[in-house]
Image (cartoon, rainbow over all chains, first blue to last red; front, side, top):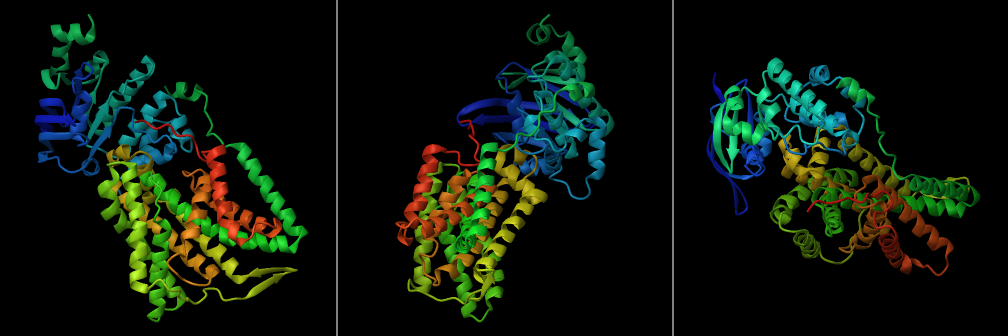
Length: 234
Length: 331
């Protein structure tokens, strides 16, 4: 397998506050990779460094070439970032949100809408509804659907389980898995819920205060003593 | 999940505040009945509508910029005035009125974009006050440049619609007023369609609503804001060109009273609402005309203080205007 995304000694800071102290990680094409860690470990900042929405230093390569430019250029290269809080445009309709997802693409989008509806059939009835009136779970689904419309090579998901009922979390992760398997989308997912993240992902990185503390296949990490104690709670 | 989603109650889109709709409906009925009763009333209403759409389109330009950049552009009127001078210059060079009109619009658009890119963007992330000061400076700058290039003395432009008066029954309606209403409303509708139905419009709305999320979706936010300024400048140019004939002469102060009415209209509409700006403009235009006709102490000198009184009253009684929503800002 070839590496789709490589971070090499990436530093990031918010003003004077340093959040990443040299993160290096690799995501292979077609994989689902989880980033775990406590609050403030730098999980969200890692994603923000990739989409260049935080001041960053160090080398980030995407498909072998350095990932440069503003967030809009990076989106154009095929990186879809679903930020914390989902980035849904609550004033726009469901349809407009989806259309915005495909903003970087040209041409006919009819097939894409049809494809999206196979994963999220309920969107059909809601297409003219204001996105802000959807429930939290629906908004997370819409965020996924919006990212899918972008036809990304790499999907960055920030805390998709945040604020969702357990049943919905399972549903969201099932769809992420389907997108990965059927559409070949590589996924880098940041999660508080280590339990479900390790079930989904093939491999994972554990961040501690802005550095990678542990890395490996999910199965190994699930057995790992400190991961179990810190993040899985048994 | 699908079943779950279906069982969740579908919350309908909230209707805009219905008392406002009722109020507007009542006002419309009042105007229609008045027009049927009295030809002078009808005449004043149509003339008020013609000035009102001009106020409304300038107010809409203010709202576009307010939504994109979150400031009031104090130079909006002067930008429009400069565009009228550009049209004037083109006519001097031998263009017909309408040729000059349609050449001026893209120039206005490009000037608006250039102003955003060169003057606004560098200070935009500092503070709101910084941007406001830049727009005030721009006001003075444009005023000075226009006076320097063309002189502050009055100029004359040909009338776009001629001086014909139509008679509908006993009601006299100026062709000028009809033309102004049609051109201005057509521009507004075109702009609305651009925002509502095109990808560019969607990008601009997204960039104005949530710049960070929009750029993650691949929208070039800086570019969208520049286009927003360009469109506002274009709309202002249309307002200026339509306002000029009603003032009969062209001078650098052309748009200053209209900017005040535009402010009042935008505030009345709720500052964030494009439809509110246009409705606010029309309401103020008609209101001022009818008050001038029927309330005898309100002579034409009192028009501006009256518009200012409307502005103050709205800010005191209902700061969110007719269609504005109280927006909670995260800081």
